[in-house]
Amino acid sequence: MNTAKNIIFISPNFPTNYWRFCRELKNNGMNVLGIGDQPYDELTWEQKDSLNEYYKVDTLESYDQVYRAAAFFAFKYGRIDYIESNNEYWLEQDARLRTDFNINTGFKIEDLPRIKYKSKMKEYYSRVGIPVARYHMVDDIEGCRNFIDKVGYPVVAKPDNGVGASHTFKIKNEEELRAFFEDKWPQTEYIMEEFINAEINSYDAIIDSQGNPIFEAGNVTPTSIMDVVNNADNSLFYIVKDLAPDTKKFGRATVKSFGVRSRFVHFEFFRLLSDHPGIGKKGELMALEVNMRPSGGLTPDMINYARSTDVYKIWADMIAFDKTEMVPGEHYYCGFAGLRFNKNYKYSISDINKMYKDNIRLYDIVDAALAPAMGDYVYLAAFKTEEQLNCFYSDVTAEAEKAPAQEGSQSQKTENEHAAAPEQNTAPEQNTAPAQDSAAVKETVKASEA
Image (tube, rainbow, N blue to C red; front, side, top):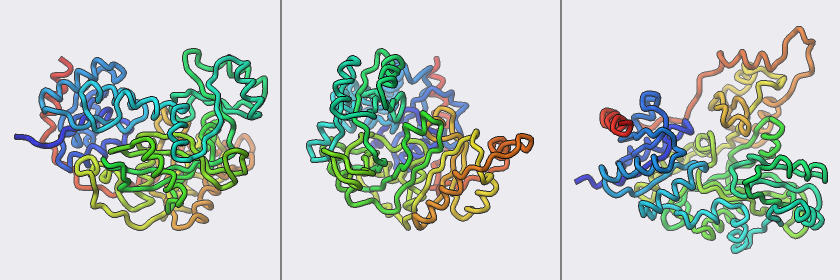
């Protein structure tokens, strides 16, 4: 009798690094059952090999199709123990599937308000004494004017249930307030908050079934993601060498208040850059938002470089065994530099590669869907000191003086240089699982497409 735990992983192929979660689950003896909308033959070898079976649907946006795929796996393998995507976009669908299949190892439909709606999060922060920004649920322009009379300009308006900085407005005056009401999505509920002069500090942790962290890290984002998106600016953030005590304290308190179990989480806090009446003094933390999944994009790989570890395995160990024996190694700062094709940088890609050849861990072109927040191409680089990290940021973002038109712009040179970019220095590989299940995967695809 097969007693292996069964986990359905939604969209194992995107983000493109997420097959690593699946591989470690499979290495831990679990049946890893993928549901996605990419044809099987288009999956990479690593993605195929990380799964026991793969069920192809026409679109993951169709709950009926995803439900039928999950039902097929439940019929074939028996009770499903976990359904996960580790992806903000699919968290609501994950919760609905857990509710319908009575899976108790993750959030269900009734849990969604406190983990998806920014207005609802504030109550749970306040319960453990973490300060929150004043806010107003957008109704009409007069209601917003009354709120602004209390807190002053600027204010920030964004979807109450939104991802990242998508459709976020920084409103500085009456004219911009009127423009916001013209441009906002008509069927979307918005929250308006007082503007906070701060940088983002995160708490990134893997939490066991008892609500205790088995791994902790964090990042600092000195540039506003809202400005990065709205102004097509460079995207910069870094994994800290060691987690600040107050970030750790607030992170653990937030885990308890929100009732987090068996999850990889990314909690965001503001660290005040100036005193803010009613909230705190410069340098203190306050609440921003919770994300009940790993920080997006390449952040798991950055954490690996910063901690000399493998968070894909640690997460999979938590799912399979509710603990891990993996001990992080030497700590570093790991910086993310997301750059733009259309900027005229002082140093070419070749220059940066030579200057930081001992520090660069990865270079890559960013998927177009992620480029607005992450940049068009990215470097990950590790450093022993914050001073070294800051020098790297200064060099990689330095812009050249305007050159005569006939010499061509650095942005043109930059795009041409990608073909000669360095080979990626990716995270250390673990032993990959054997490929004997490939035929079974293909049979499932055929059955699902019939």
